[in-house]
View 1 (cartoon, rainbow, N blue to C red):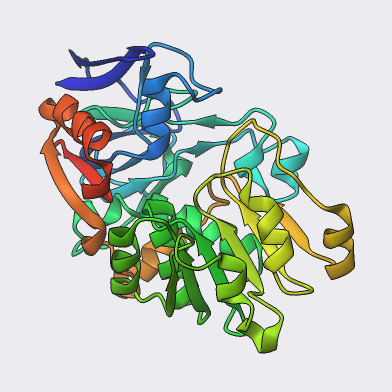
View 2: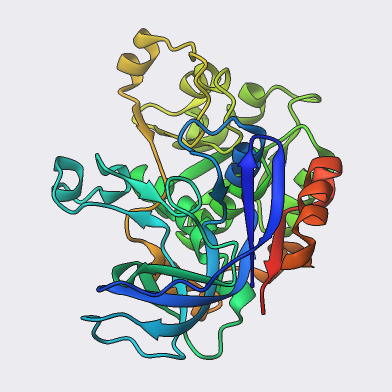
Length: 338
């Protein structure tokens, strides 16, 4: 048995591991497939402000139930599951308000707690979501990334009447694009990388914009009868984009932020008030994995097309090295624990 941990910033290790015993209310998951996220890279680089080292990383993972702890009802050994990495207290104000993803005592697998880059992991039974028998573990492991997109679009109230501009055509941008299209919205994607823009078109973007050849503001000016996009999502995490987003979004428009940069962002109060812009942050997901699993089961998303490379778990260092060395060749890299 192995686990993949960051011992300290810059030090990734594939180490021997032991099989945990599930406590009351927990289940033991035999991990089958797990995805590498940008936040895993941030933990490796030492730029995630929430991680404590050493840390077994990984929060996008699916597998089989190997054991069920005392007091757990409705789950059986052998069930196929995906894990929601958000662990909340259930008692604080955010939890009572239906926002457990920003719980005052929030813990996330792979960040605050040891995560799913290991053969076996014990998790609260409330955090596992059953998946259909016919769903591949590779697909199930993508439920969490899609839940990030579902959360920000839910926060911005995206629907069929909207035109959505997504900054960035990386993993976040592509998941937002797919969910926005599923919700019936028209979708524009802006990125400075031609290959990424081509990828976005392959995933159904109605328009793609390269800011190097045409300013985004000019490219989107004609949308919504000349008012601009009604929803803007920053999938790139660039603080400087907020000022442009406020200038180009339609009156009564909504802006969703996903980045974690501590750098301040310029913001025109006049623009926000003049247009009555709704500006929302979005973190993790608000118990949306069951909805996403349903979408995946119905074939309404294209998860398989997002998986660009798969490495045996024992070769995790090679997977991380590829992402570091040639990020333009990767969209979603997964680790196989089967």
